[in-house]
Length: 194
Image (cartoon, rainbow, N blue to C red):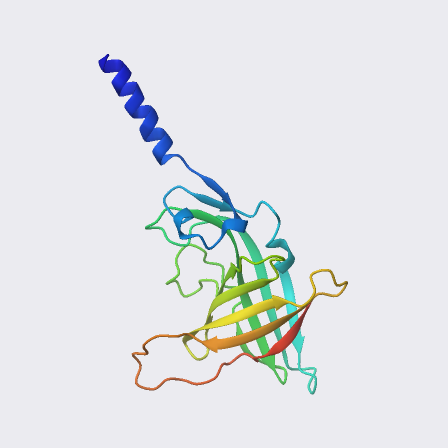
């Protein structure tokens, strides 16, 4: 009888703590962000964002922005809460009048958000069909400030893919005495997938 209880207890513990896998289509439901869960891109929703996206100034071809997105499988954004998700991370390069203003394309650190070379773009898929929009948390390296951006593919079925890019300041209390306004990167622009 004692062995049966022990086996039952072990079985119940295993079921309770077993890893659950959820579709990225459920992204945004807080209950899935818990220990041992995986949020998988089982529908390929992130794939359309992967690659290089470029904006060139209409008045100066030597001024451009490149945003590079890449897909990471089973990324753990919060080591204290051991869940894993497929996500989009990225970096950028901005050149103005042939002078490189900022370049984070070589930032490769994925596990330590406080590292100097941590990727500069974290994208979250908005959970709305046709999954053509990502909300971005990013760092403006030159101005040393966090900001948000919206990246929306204009037409997912178009032969030439374009996307809108709109940045905004993060909300909340600012502890620095002088708040730096504006952004280093161009804002309210349309990028083309390369």
